[in-house]
View 1 (cartoon, rainbow, N blue to C red):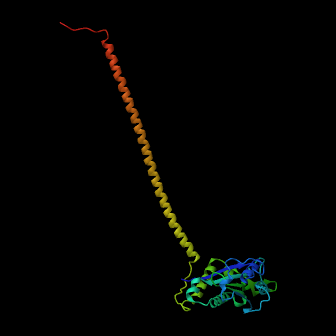
View 2 (spheres, rainbow, N blue to C red; view 1 turned 60 degrees about the vertical axis):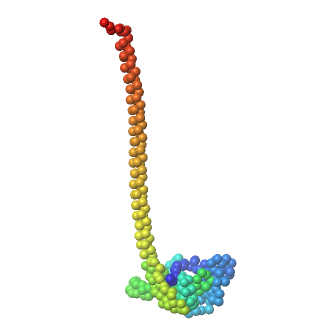
Length: 293
């Protein structure tokens, strides 16, 4: 079972520097410790490398991706603190490369093309191919420039014009667009089924966020129902125990009262016996006589 992997995040101008350090492997040049998950010894014969693009074509890098983004944004309408770039991380699960005997570079090149088709080749700034982490992947930086038709009106008249604008929300704005991205990438990965020396790799679409929520809600409701039933049963047991305890207390009180009553009766009988004897003695006192003929 293999899965396509694609992640996306919006970048402001302030976030580009850190992204470039990671993507272009500039840790040593900036005096920064390399993260532990990056292991150059895992690279083997493949090279981790980055490619800069201008107008959809590879260029000799006279600056980093940040400089290329600034050049591409010249004359583009944008707001302060706008999202100036989008970063895609594209790959597949390790099983895909392990079982399918796939050429990782070929797959990643096509994944870059997949991103380029969404944004237009002219908006692709760089692609960084990493083979020194847990599985091969690529980081693709694009500028979210779209052409918008704008209506205008002034004293001279009115009309429409087309202009380039930054609009990241057209690509990453909301769960529906992100879910659509996952669907599209899944269809992209499906073309690689049956490719390579081993044919057993099959791609599966991960669970959609909405379905995850439904599953979670259903599962949670089921668990809550069980808990409620257990609580009700526990309450019934507690009530039964309390009733039993109450009954036992009443029985104990009854036994105590019965015992006390029996003692009173015995005392009363004893007292009554002494009274009868005293009365008999009083009646016969002074009357001692003998009956004869």
